[in-house]
Length: 66
Image (tube, rainbow, N blue to C red; front, top):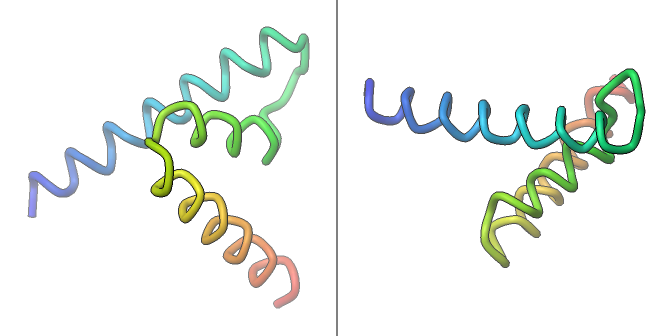
């Protein structure tokens, strides 16, 4: 279980770091869903990125409508 936890933490840190760099590059003070989606597309390979973005969008939509 600790291996899976380390894997998830590593991916989260990579996505957060990349999103932060994208926000800084675009001179934005906050990280938006657009930066997160772009970071996911840059970090995860092909089909995995498409599914991650799709599931993330679905989760945010469900959260905001509840």
